[in-house]
Amino acid sequence: MGLIRAWAWKAALIVVATPLVLGLLYNLVQPVSTLMLARWVSGQPVVREWRPIADISPALVRSVLASEDARFCTHIGIDLVELQQVLDDSDGMDASRGASTITMQLAKNLFLWNGRSYVRKALEMPLALYLNVVMSKRRQLEIYLNIAEWGPDGEFGAEAAAQAAFGRGADRLSARQAALLAVTLPNPHHRRPGKPGPGLSRLAGNLQARLPREGPELTACLGLDR
Image (tube, rainbow, N blue to C red; front, side, top):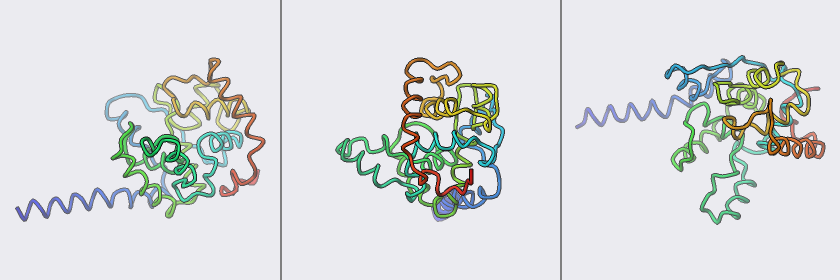
């Protein structure tokens, strides 16, 4: 029994230490997501070409932030303002919806699994807080833009998404194309930015109309002088 307990403690220590160590390491290397790994293991295609954030269209950077996490530059990994609003609206019954920040999505993509689960959400939040401490905002967004699932056939990251949808690099996207890609993120298996239907076009148009109202604080933490 003592040997089993010792091995259990060692296994638990490894489980806890792995994301902590990787969180530091990912400041230096180009990570992949758990979903990318799962597709590789199952023999499914993965298309990803890493792009430094400086080589990604500013229109896409702003569109993704405005669509996914407008307070990215000011929150601590968890958006307490958004979380409180969701709690108020849901009476605590569905607090995970609508409150997920880019940092939380990054924690999920790097270390956890897809699907709605209170267990996953409970793990996601402390991991997001940790990533926000050990990783700059610029690096968080750079990784997110390179590992986010962006299509139904294994397209991951902005470059693969831009090439698949528009036949051009992520550095050459127009404002309209950037908006279409941004609003595709919540449902990349069913939304087609290259051939948008009326619903997706409307979402992209609404995002484009809102973008001019977003101030410089939207990207102030990124150090992108352009």
